[in-house]
Amino acid sequence: MTQFFSFVLRSSIAVLLGAVLLWQPLHAQQPSPAIEWQKALGGSGNDVAYSITQTSDGGYIVAGYSYSTDGDVSGHHGAANHPDFWIVKLTSGGEIEWQKSLGGSDGDWANSITQTRDGGYIVAGYSNSTNGDVSGNHGGLDYWIVKLTSGGEIEWQKSLGGSGDDWASSITQTSDGGYIVAGRSNSTDGDVSGHHGAANHPDFWIVKLTSGGEIEWQKSLGGSNYDDARSITQTSDGGYIVAGSSGSTDGDVSGNHGGGDSWIVKLTSGGEIEWEKSLGGSNYDDARSITQTSDGGYIVAGVSTSNDGDVSGNYGLFDYWIVKLTSGGGIEWQKSLGGNRDDLASSITQTRDGGYIVAGSSRSTDGDVTGHHGSIDSTDSWIVKLTSGGGIEWEKSLGGSGLDLASSITQTSDGGYIVAGQSTSTDGDVIGNHGGGDFWIVKLTPPNPTGVKPTGLPTPSPWAMNANYPNPFSTTTTITFTVPERSFVRLSVDTEQGVEVARLIEEQLEAGEYRVPFSGDGLASGTYLYRLSSGSTSLVGKMTIVR
Image (tube, rainbow, N blue to C red; front, side, top):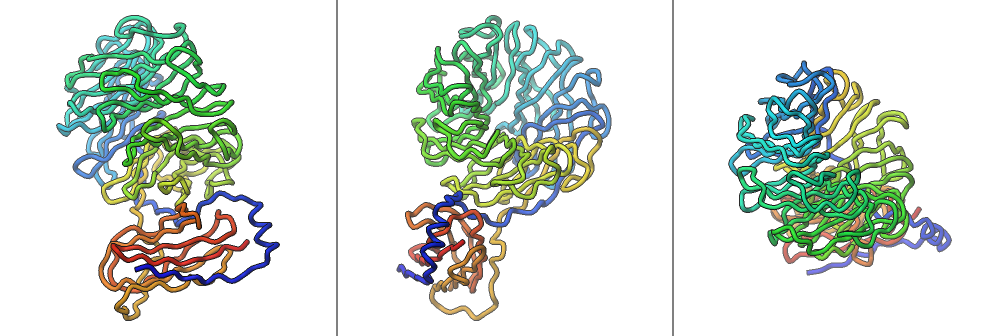
């Protein structure tokens, strides 16, 4: 059954026309989740976390690098000016189970970690060490791939590359039990073949490994300019999707818009190019994270300083740039997020409600960004939850008065989020800094219908939804509805054209009457529909925002 409630009061035409001209971003924000716990991990040196994932036991595994030789860090291999891979296993509450420093007497930097199907871990980064845990270096920096047991002991390690510099950025286990690695290389020898440019211009370098770390195949992708792969994942068809940046206009690269573009490459299971897309505008654009979405397309997060070509809505300087692609690489939608200073997205993943969660850093104090902790010269971790259509559901600035950067985010089994990055702060949200920069791990609470509370009134038998009050409204209104029996309920807000701008509830609710506050901040003046659905039941109301 469908009931339609229209409770719209007429306002002056002049007010509405004036509001229409504002063309504010079409999104309505919910309250952001609270910090469940946070941990500063490290020592008196500089420690930077780049990758985190939840483990099968409900804890977390974190990878990055550390210059420290004290505090939480033990087993450092080199001098204080040479970092090690630093791998930390945490409990579900953020306590250290074990930690490992991996490397040699030179520099070792970990960028990516994931749990393997045997309960161990695979780590990728780069190293120019030739001793300690590292063997087989080809000269300069090499990809360094390390397979660990569930307790953090080395099963095997591989140095991959040539006599130039080779930087691994991303690794994942493949369906056959092997691994796929992406990064950049300016080598023309050793394990590397097919390099496109001069020695000082790297290519995407994609390497497929067996379960034991042997090379199955490798591909150099790019042109005569700079090409840098940042993120790779296996796709549902057994191939791979890669994201990074390219300044090339030849070779494998077509359609460059000027400056550096985000460059997306779809590969077959054997590493052949199916399609490639240059995305961006006339300024700098750089894709840093990609994942396949439930509809078979892709979601990309990175940065952009462009405001033309494929990019619109730039606030100034660097913005988060989020692009939803079809399975064939066509743009479905794109969003510039941020403010008037630098906003740099590092990580994106699809959430269980069909939306997306993005993490990075921001120096902005306006635009989409609220709650910045420090001065205009300080940086916060900035977390943004998006709807399936790219509207902002909520955003949260995390940090203190120092430098705070989020590098990696994933949704946790309880529906919350785990974030990893670095912090130099000793105030604000940050507690326990050891000196310099620390790994900073933040657990955010799972979403709940904040402000969605049973009123305690007797429950009428049918489904019911009352008019929102007040209506029209300028900032906040309340939606009231009745659930007759325990049901899975969804409450969303759409434009009159059917574009979702907010998802307020998507979960099981007990029988009762509920009151849900809704903020129209950030929405343009106009009429919106709120929809309550459960099974075959659908209730629709209409509300009007007047500025």
